[in-house]
Length: 608
Image: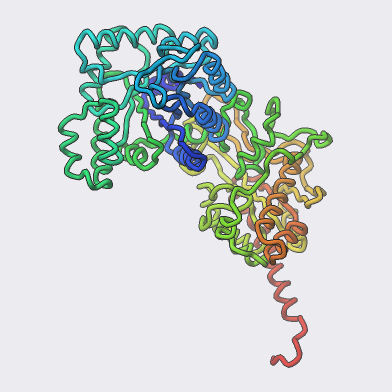
């Protein structure tokens, strides 16, 4: 979606919005850490993120990769910087085509800084000299596909009148050539900024202005960055910070309040600005503190437009339904369905197809290293060890399992104790959701989708279980007409009590002015495709232990014997009913086990 449209919508709703800027790091580990950070900071509710091209144009491939990941996997709207530095026309076109393929519709067009090692800027052969040349190239070759942003410099307001007039004229020419909004350079002098906004408005520039806000992280960093950008620092601000210049924590605390006051004034002034663009410097804490100080709470609709993470690439942007089985493995689901032409109902297609359920080439793997796995999960050698491990995961005491890349979702806390109990009884849960009966869509735990709606979901459980325990469970399950289930073994033999071949919607939402949305389903074909992955993850977990170790043997044997089961309780008004059959079967299993132990022969010489 174009940023100008997002801004337009926010103005219509008279609400404040915010966005974040990141830059490509220099190392592979830095890149992974940044992606993890962007993922976390998505929960702060940015309307979009902005990825820089790097001074001197050296990291164009990394920029493109970051844009792709943000659009496809993290599901956040992205703006890509593009500079003239070291960029002949053919490289510009490659960058723009890649951005388009990734679903990115927003470009910040810049001349850029001098190439590395040079003091003066110079055009590359076959390239462009000014930002306006880049804007014209984009509009000539891509029409209105991209929103084009340009940079604005509030500091220009302090120039002599003739020079200021010239800078404003150049900015207006860029807007007239096709720029649709303006990102400003960071500033700390609010009076200067407000005067500059009024100056460019008086010159006939009417496109949205997005103020660039830089959190103050450390005193030295603050002085260095403002000096580099030749930014005016008001004396009052400097006087407050300087006495604590050797105390980073105090500088950040005071700086947060000062910058927050600046933001409040900008939003309060009658200059038509309702958005703030935070220069994060790839750091999380300073931006988070500023948002908290400003009491800017993320909207559920921004963080969670659907119950699962939406992908914003062109062919997936309209995807509205997914099977529940990949709820904890989004990347894997996106990879395995990458070549689908369309996503009509979230199903995997015809099981007779030669490509059905194929795992090769999809990169099914556990992301933890051998050392991390041992540290996280220890060395299990019994069902009791695994039950305790899975229970701890459900209670939020460990951050991942082989079947779940991340810690349990916040809604899991509603049923965490019940899940822990099920695992103690021998039902090794790998996926679940609680029943929800008409929760407001703005709810911080269960909510998703547009505001002023209501969301619903059926209770769902998925687990591995040994055959003897399943044999006790199913009679109890089948006594409840509201429960449907699928049971499958490693070789693909499927058993079910459902009479329908169609999908069972387990999540749905009712929103003003919309048809009922049913984004999450359970159905047989997708479950059979997921089965291969679920068992493969168990096998890979076992392989993280030494060849002849008891842990490897135990986990592999368990995967061979266990069945994979999913259960849906179809009455969402009975939140605890799904657990009752498990508690009954578990009690029977424990009783039978105790009886077996009592009747076992006593070794010779043992006392009674």
